[in-house]
Image (cartoon, helix red, strand yellow):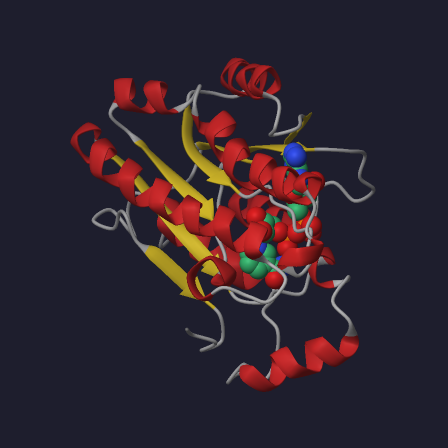
Length: 240
Ligand SMILES: NC(=O)c1ccc[n+]([C@@H]2O[C@H](COP(=O)([O-])OP(=O)(O)OC[C@H]3O[C@@H](n4cnc5c(N)ncnc54)[C@H](O)[C@@H]3O)[C@@H](O)[C@H]2O)c1
């Protein structure tokens, strides 16, 4: 039987209660991983796994998550920094709250998630990190100066981490989804969605499962063992 080598590996996914995060949790579970995930508020259709309520903007909560996961499951092998949010407005209308909210979740949240875990991975000389960035972080998008800045920063973070982590046998990669059918697309007006679709050579939005497979590949100690510091674009040819 072909294997991605994720059986019994403990993986933490932030924002795993819905959308892309939930698809990642479900696929990793099918692939035999021990999955823990965080969520911010109550959710109706929770995926399998150790579910922990924690806000990624809260460093103490994320320290506690790392401890609980290792205590309840086993030493963490993989981290998927997926939690993220948008607060889209053209720049003149953007408030300081919109700016700080997005940067705090998407960028400081990445820091808070990985800060307690990376030293453990280095110490054990094993592990894989996948950061979920975005097409907007590479090509920019109208109304997303805050979001695109946070997602571009996540790419810089991932590339830097990959260079320092290499000597410890730890890999760090990013996945840059194009437009994916989740709650995140709901606030976009239909007319704008039509315009976006017309720009996507596949003429459809992506599915959360299509991101989950890219993440599983980059977590795999077998399939992607020599891949680090890369940004895997999953976007139906919607390139820059
Ligand atoms: N949907 C898209 O088109 C798209 C495209 C590119 C990148 N992404 C990225 O993919 C990731 C997942 O997005 P999605 O489309 O599934 O969106 P979503 O809104 O359906 O899910 C976002 C998840 O992040 C969690 N989250 C948000 N803020 C949080 C916080 N402060 N603390 C803890 N959890 C928090 C939410 O609870 C939820 O589980 C995000 O990082 C997003 O930026 C999405």
